[in-house]
Length: 121
Image 1: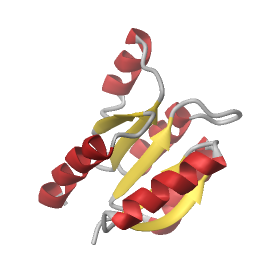
Image 2: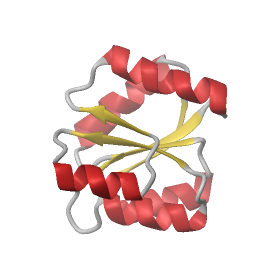
Image 3: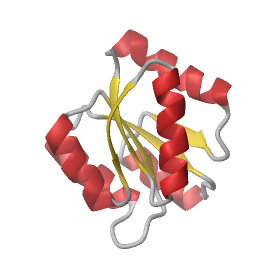
Image 4: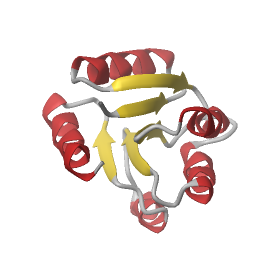
């Protein structure tokens, strides 16, 4: 079973996305609402996949991804975002994220991303 954490500053988004992942057979080990919570959850659970939003107040997704990469350079990180600028895309490329899922969620897109992990985990 694939384990994951879900981090987004919007409580409803976190709940809905977690519910979708659980219906698809993943085990959601924890939910967070900031970049610093993402890092704590990653260290606590060591999930197979991190699903994380970029735009969050205080500590954002970029902060979390950088810290998680220092802990585990091979961590699988999927960014969940509503918009992606060219500058943001370049930053994510530098951070070597594994995939991007765009809001609003598309179930087929989520399934495609998850299929990558059933083979590579």
